Amino acid sequence: MTSPSAPTVRENGTGTPLVLLHAFPLPARMWEVQLERVPGPAGDDARVIAPDQRGFGAAPLGDRPPSLDTAADDLAALLDRLGLERAVLGGLSMGGYVAMAFARRHPERLAGLVLADTKATTDTDAARANRERVAAAVLERGSVDLLIEERMAENLLAPGTDPELTDAVRNMIAEADPAAVAWAQRAMAARPDSLDELAALDVPAAVIVGELDTVTPLSEARMMAEALSDAELTVIPAVGHLSALEAPETFTAAVRALLKRVK
Image 1: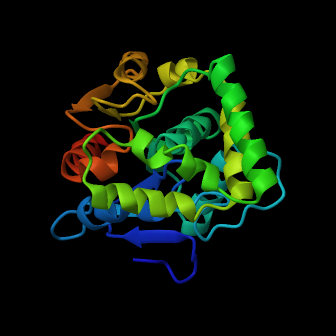
Image 2 (image 1 turned 60 degrees about the vertical axis):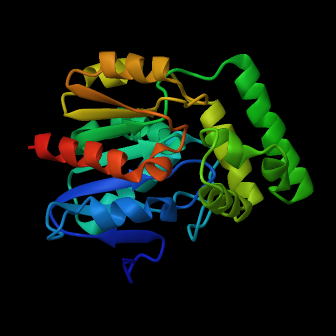
């Protein structure tokens, strides 16, 4: 399911183009279940595309200053490379921030939107300060061990999550490049409020959130769903921030329901 001409992109299926943007600080392989199942039994309901974002997985970081606008423009360039004028865009957590930046910069290329376990509001001062603390620390150490020490995997998942999934998330976090982690933290800290951009969109949307998500809670999901003109909100019981990994069947069903609404 990897395109030979684009080694940082995983792809499967045909039909409506759906680009899935991964969470911080994971790679695109977090979408393995969705890559397999969203296209449907015949594989022709959707063309699912999951790129590694700048600095993560196999994608180079480059030398651009931290900015979600840069990440959004990376996505526009990917669509150009794949010959796609428009696509449904789905993002979880950081991927949602990039999706909203894309909606702000390239709204005419958006056919539909999935916002999962993310938020349209800006960081608080305390959250921005913490992002800078983490960015500076991983660069100083030359290691992302701090993320493991601070139990990031456990904080992203609901209490009582299967230990195998917790280990898998922890391993993906441990693979992250410190420079990419710092770049992404600083880019996310500088993001603007996106509620006005969401209100201006005229495409079908799905907002998905884990009931026990403490990072981007249900209140934030409701705010986005209310801002969007044509949104369906799905609250997945008993899961945390990484709902696509914790409840892949329910998550996939919500995405497939959105695709049926896309013209």
